Length: 352
Image (cartoon, rainbow, N blue to C red; front, side, top):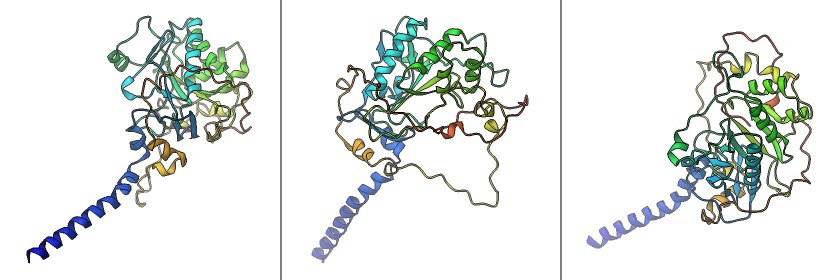
């Protein structure tokens, strides 16, 4: 009897072990892409490469923007989102110097770039996944470096007049703010600069420099406290999915801009059909991203010291042109109309 009991226990133990081995890959796959990429603290040890689209991809061989530089400071360090393609880190350092020369304090405050290996984030952005997006605050860098806690606690400053619908606050917005945004748009490697629709309108009304650069400045929800720089795919980045081109004109008299000042972008979502069973949104899994992202996630890590940027600039002189069509962010879904006074202020929404 004892031998039979031992045999039974052995069979149970073996079955349990086999079950655990079978379940381990399944448990790994059940993690969402947000959970998987959000848990990684350091980049992989590989050549730099953006993989996929800005809002659906990952990043190999990321480099970190140093937390402090002569003309920049990285903010919200606890998020661990100061990682980017070397081309982006080089651009931010160049832009920070140019910003200081414009009279923007002693340089720029840099918000989120990407996670160590890119990918979807646990909170916040829908994009910033391939190391070619970065947020710059509408607040200049102070003369003295801030502590880590000060970088966590420092509030944003909105450029909007909250008492008026989609109106820039003239007490806060200056010609230097305008020059800063347009400086960002001036680089050939920059594909888009996202700002609040009110800021785009203000630039349309006041900018006297190169008007063709205004086509790169795209209106979008939020973005009244910071602006978002998006780069073109670097030359030779075969795995990087390009976004549609921006207009070659200032795009100030287009229906695309006028649409933002109608009811439609700000209307609350329509109530669901009460007779229809609610469908739970499907989470994005690692397998939904480009195939190479699973390998990036599993690869050996590079140390933070090895991954702090100090490389040579990336040349963009041979940057291929993007497709001629404009993206969904510029889609027109209604004709311009007078703006009623009761339209609410914008809510943050994800965008492609």
